[in-house]
Length: 361
Image 1 (spheres, helix red, strand yellow):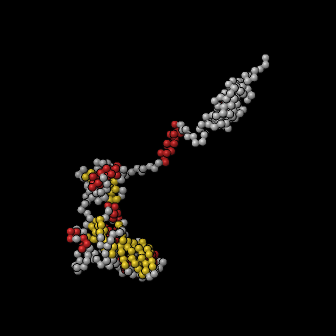
Image 2: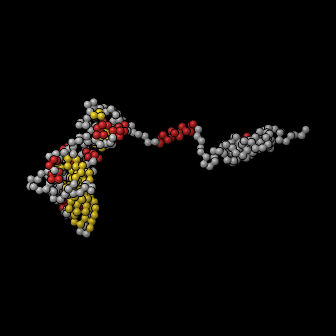
Image 3: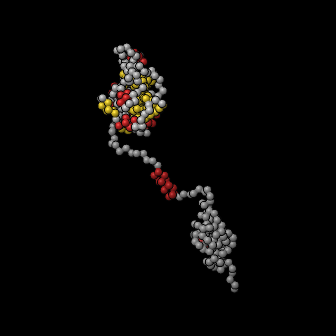
């Protein structure tokens, strides 16, 4: 009896039929392409058709026709099509989530010991903040909950904390909050020929004439400006702050614009930073720069924390460039801005806080 073609041996290699070769029992193309059930060279071979993982056959072996299910040259798989989303198993998803969590910025944990700043006789913290103009009650509660508020240097997140505004210090994002409504803080642009006094015995025009009788007894000036110097003068009834702002030990800077004769030597700034000897001792600037220059004169910015009388005029005269006009434009971080001569304005909460920081209060 002659052998039957295509039915001889199910494992007969590349030319045979059956499950591993040839035309097989089904004759046409099966799920994974080729001829026979697995196309071409059995379950591990064949190059035809489409396979879910991008190749023909189930195991990716060489077989008679090509690669198996996990790789090869045959066809296009669902996962390898251009633009197709990549499917992730549970394990891959867990690892990806761990990587994303590791990349997120971690909030620093406080290592300082817990300190109870609660004063049962005080006022609720959020109410005090709202009354001081920090924000609405709800805004203040959010600031407390998010850790923006400190009491006596310790972060407070409990809504039930009460504090005494007269004995305890409160900061929001590092800015001191002032609760005493009786405290007054003003910026005054002193004009030329006005005496820095609340009541001049010689009858000259003084800053008291700009305040009115109602405020003369309550306010005093922080430092002085010469009669022929104009610019920023701070007025307050906060005695401790005023004292520290004037004391050189706290290093609160004052910024001046001075018009001087020109031209200026290149090393003038370095000379002033190194120090100039005056009759009452040496003085040095914190900063110096030329703001403008024209033939015969220049405008310079001088920053220093000295408070001696006529110190800027004497210093510039000692280096051969006497002051023609002098204006103070800044004390600490509080600037004169667009305030016109003879006018005054109340300082903002942020400005008052910056003065407290500068005075180390």
